[in-house]
Every structure is written in structure tokens, then in C-alpha cells.
Length: 198
Image 1 (spheres, rainbow, N blue to C red):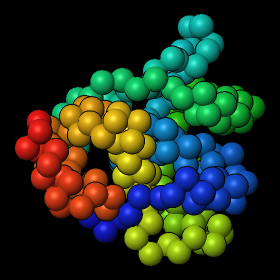
Image 2 (cartoon, rainbow, N blue to C red):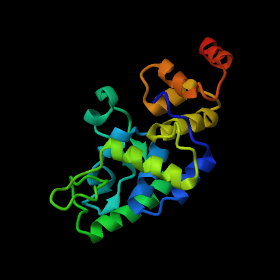
Image 3 (cartoon, rainbow, N blue to C red):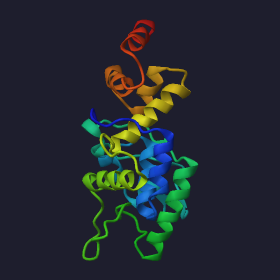
């Protein structure tokens, strides 16, 4: 986490724009719009986002507690319209190939012929790095956690610089964890002032 930097909005758009693969673009959008960590994104199954009884996308997504960092649960996250659109395209591809079934990994590996294998966090990291290279974004210090840090910056600005709101959004237990995310955009004095005002 410490080495990754937040991405600028233009970089986020460039990475998506240079990712033609439907699955990989959906992964980038999921990272961008949920703030989930790579291993949390990798853990998702089809029934975490798709309601098979109504044959529709669920309004919210929730990573199971056992896949969360330190096994700490976090509130469910509403599906952003951009993520809904990307998931609709990806799930249509899964349905066409006969893999839209409960319990199937959401991000099927291309090596799933003999067994249904999902992507691991390292592969998701490689997808992000490859997208950065294709987009002409310096891949140094760019990874999956760059999206989480970018979301923290957006939340910081949208909440009127409310560190507690950002902490809750990211699911941090301690404000100091949230502060580490905001170090790249704030001076030490500004952060100290927030702690003194809280």
C-alpha cells in the first residue's frame, strides 16, 4: 500500500481507455468505484453481484468477511452506474459461454477449461500494470491500491475534508490508517490541524 500513489482522474480514464478486454476493463472499474483491495476484488463470485432468482444485478456488493483484511467486515457498497454497466457487459459474456452460475468466480481465469479458476490478486495487479503501460502512464508506484488511494482523495474532497467520513468509507479501524492515504495530498500541518479539530 505504501508505495502506490493515487491516480489522477485523467490517468484512471486513460487506463480504462487502453483496456479493450471486457473482463479487464470491468476489473479496473470495480477497483475504481468500490475501493476494494485486490484480494477482495479477486474473491468476488457471480452471486455477490448478481441475483439469480430475479436475473438482475444486485443494488449493492459485499465482500465476505473472510476475504476482508484482518477479517473485519465492512458495509456493503452501492453499485455505481459505471460499474453496473461494465458488469452487465461482463456477465453477458459469462452467460454466452455458460458460466453465469452461482458460486462461479466473477473474474474467470482464461485457464478455466478443466476447472473454474478465478483470478488471484497478483494477476489483477498485472492487469493494472499492463493497462498503465499501454496508456503511457508511468507504471512506477501504480498498482491496485492506487485506485483505493484515489477513492480516498475523492472522498476527502467530496466530504469537505472530513477525515472521519473517509475513514468510514474505506472501512479503516484507525484514523491513522486513513491519514496514511491522505499524506500524498496534504501537508503534515494540515493533517495535524484535522486531528486537533476532531
